[in-house]
Length: 581
Image 1 (tube, rainbow, N blue to C red):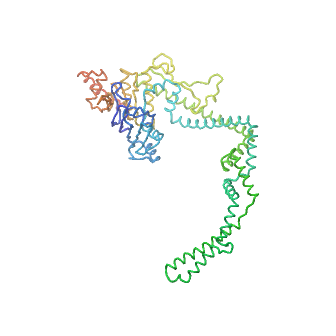
Image 2 (cartoon, rainbow, N blue to C red):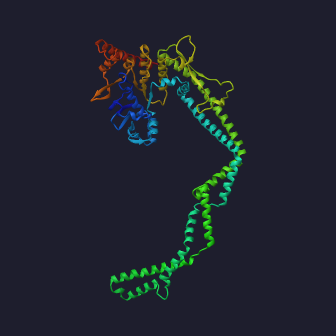
Image 3 (cartoon, rainbow, N blue to C red):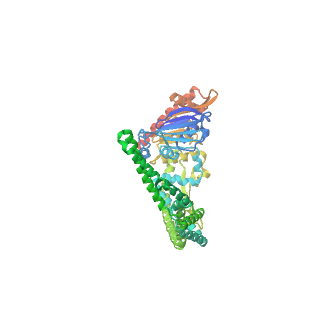
């Protein structure tokens, strides 16, 4: 249940916090007062498209926060635990912030989350039904969705299996089409891939070998310089030159010269020890240097081989990949493709066989789905007619018409993820008239009542969010029908929290709580304010709804109080009848 909705700097609303109650909450106010802003705030919580134009003039950001009671919603509690987004175990806070820079910051229990995560959670908590949904009824392509939702328990498992089978059939068909195309181009492709594979295999590629070749290239190109440096260093350090002593010999003589006095003072001993150790280190280094000089082996043929190998790799790099690893991956890829091309006849037969098998499996599940829908349609029609009778349409008839296959049309021509069925709601409101397509014969008021009937059926199903928002779903209704719709919405409010934006006094009177939305000017700025009404204020507002803004006479107020009292009595009678039923 939605406990609280906070709105900050959204459109004409500066700061506002609304506390909602269980049952039926209505929001009323004159046209243009700003009722749609509250609906926009709810849509933001649901993750709907955010328009920066909603940010209040002069502000850099807008924020909406909704707090929900989760005491009876184990499904959402478990979902939040899986996502590690738990806060107070009996409540959840969902907020969304829009900035003028285009940022969209979503939070659940204070933790920033992606928009898709916000949508996934809020969809389990809140359901909104607006005026635009009447237009959905006018498009027959949407009608099958209402039936599937009504009979979700038996239809959804079949629909999921159908989607899986359709995906398999579609993917197999795409593979088959690609293979057929490749077979048509096979000769040319085979020649090119064969040449490339022979060239790459002939190169005997070794991963990362270019690094070692580059090291060898540096050595061979600098071999003379390296040998000269080794010779000179050895001559000075260990061999000596032209009868002169080597650095090692001279260092050893210096150490020996200190030996007689080293023990006379700690400072002498320290210097002696350092020089003695240094002497050994220089002797070791001199031996290593001599060893490197002995190992010097310049091979002109090997040098030419390294240069030639690097030239080959560079040429292949430009054609097949930046490194030997890239070229090896490409070589393995074209080897696999060549194998497929060479075996394409066999692969073609195999894929054609798989395509036929997947088509038969898809056809089988499609037929089962159709049968389930046909069976559910009879129950749906009966339930809808019962709902419409409750809404004052005692002679209304409604049927789901399934379109048969056309001349020359095969079932496979209709394969889709949603099945093969095409259907349309057929409707008749009066006795003695034939059923006709709903979009052609239903009036605005009839569409409103049909939509309300659909929503009432939906509300009776498990898993439907406990909070339902109706945005002027009563369009086109007046008089006695307005009272009937009000009673139906009150019944929904007995089992779900209902938040309803309405212009009808009959619906406002049946509410458990009422809010007034009004627009006012303050300091040269237009603002929207929402006020929770007490019983006296409700009577005043309902009087305005009945007779207009100027209708504040004592008799109109008494009439409004009477409407409220009658509404309370009707609610009690409806609840008692429901309890006995």
